[in-house]
Image (tube, rainbow, N blue to C red; front, side, top):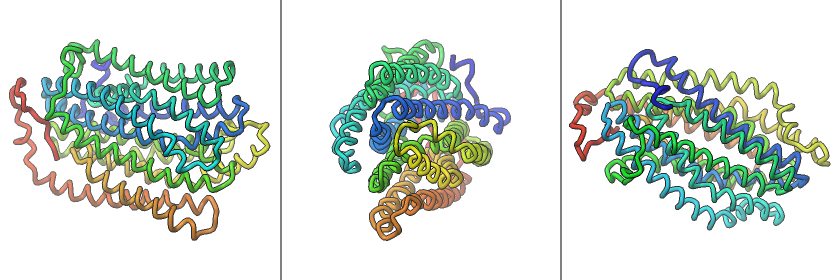
Length: 476
């Protein structure tokens, strides 16, 4: 399937290629958010437990740490495959793909064990109410069992996206997402399993996704990125390059989750309506976030392929077009969310909940505060994707650790306690940290472009023989 619908960013017009590549990713991500929203809607509307929504909502910061590490490391594999594919080093593409898929299994099992061991201690740092803590811990225990499947799916998707195919992951998600929604309704409404039910539905759909992407790669035997079980082995040189890009990317994403743990602790200092509003607003705001981050994936893949080929002009066009499209799409989606926020929020809330009106009001305030500033966050992600496409994943990680993670921790720990105890006093740390991050990324890119202009990429990209065991991709 992937071979028929892949995009080659090294030839032809870039603007529409980036747009057409990003749209399926956008649709995939929005569908994922809608499926996650289905978890919250089902548990909020039909579980009969007024604490269930708050319990599921407060798990996001913890569960995202492991998931973001997996996604980050998989992005490293995607960048390496994209660079090698752009350089037409097909033997190296094959070795990189097999290394990536074996790594996905090892990483998934490792993160699953870590998740099972640390989920409750981490939750206890944020959640004070014992009944909510118990339900949240049960949810995360089950979710941790799905990390290996999530790892295999994300590595497999990174491979097919790196060769220009963003439609296959969308098709897989449509199928697995529908399974997730149907199982949500079955487990919660029929078997009355509440938070455990939506967690089970999630991991079953994740294993379906992992199975399907694995079958697709196994069937692509004639392609350089196809997987053959007998060839599954770790190429040390390529693995080091993947981890050099992927680990900083994973730490960058997880840094957001770690800082958000502190913010969640701040949220939990309010009454239950605001705690529940956190779960609702996070789902809605994420629609805007992923709409713009689709262009981060496009920037990373297009930059990686053209950097592998050695085309400096197309590398810079990748940055410009991806940034512009991110801002345009972000503004459109932000406006739609702002106009429709109240009816959307109402879908999440059980009308029989005595605090329903207070939950809705708090969520409306939350979404209204976030919706347009979130565009700055999306732009920063595109800038990060461009740097990763060049092979520089360390700079975005450092920016996030300082301008986002450290700044937010300082805000919650030292600034927020001295401000009026209002929701907005806590939330201001988000747009300020996004602005600092974006400005820092622009500074790094200006330096990187100057360095790029001094490099003789054509000399670096002279094609070695296909069977060169030490063949490596270009790096920045």
